Image (cartoon, rainbow, N blue to C red; front, side, top):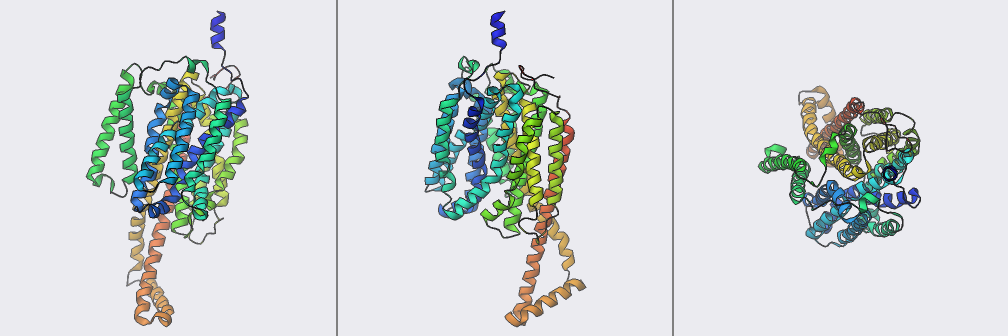
Length: 524
């Protein structure tokens, strides 16, 4: 009986949990910011390494691919090598790979380095999340997750801004070199403060499920390739995409079957039997699509239609981080006092209203016209991330948190990839649609068109002569048509994003109410 009571007592770290929080949040923040910091460097990387823009985008794809493969397998590696040692090894791999990316002199070298970097970074988020969850008592986990969420929500916003500034002021290589001192600091702090709980030290995960791991890599890789290249190659109009899709479906089904039929799978999919985790995974998938879609579409609008450079476009959307900073302490307090479903619902509703506010954009706005809704959107995302993580993971036994964190973060990253792909596809397809619709107004028989063309030609005739003035007037009309078609495609995208956020609210109420109590992981 005393032995059972001892086993039922929750494990406590020997150091202040806030020191552990600092140690594990730094590498998680470094990894999240690196997913977006390289996006603004692509044109510079292409020019420096004598590659095309299409080839340079593989710098992003290769990272996401290896990152996604490691995420769900991180729990097995934690049990096999020890969570502390695996975390330190991951940070070292990530840091060394960052140096190799910055020093690369060819496209092949940087792609191989990005594969290595993604493999090192894949485990940083789930490891940090699981360590935080177990290091704090249940009544303080909300505040801990608020601090962790601050880094995860702010990092994708700061990434393009920081990357643009480093690229403009120094070189694209410093977008990778900046990780080196951060990685060294993270290794020192983890070595000093982080420790493994008893169940990690005594774990026996068995041999690695090589078949499951291979199937995981294939279907995730095929999915990432399809999402990344689909729009450019006309989706299922391309034969290779049809083959890749078939390979993805077959390997995914085979992977799921194998994980339920072998004794020690690479991932424990039975965790989805927990209703809160299953519904939370759906919501974090949609959350990833919304936040990464927003992070993608607004800088694109500023660069493509407003002619901003990379740094200026990143700076224009950076106030979202202010909203997140303001929200996290408040959410950390409220999450233990208010039904988390109310907080998550409020977050999605407010984000949806911000998306509707963004959809009123036009080509006459100033850099700060969208500042207020951007700040409010950052505030709303804090109300989604922290309560959702607390609800989805706080109801699980400690030994399942590591596996669940890997799958949970995988769902968010996959949702982000899908969201970015949908945003880019809608932009391209709806630009064509609106161009066709607007073209009806430019008929030679339209009096308004004839009048505008005559005025423009007369204005240009003094400079270019009558013949050249007419040609230039037509070109200016063409440029205006293209600009307006693009503008309406951005408006459509933002309205669809608002609809997706609103659609999440009913799903939130499929979660069971979970209220953390002292001395228990969670009580219903």
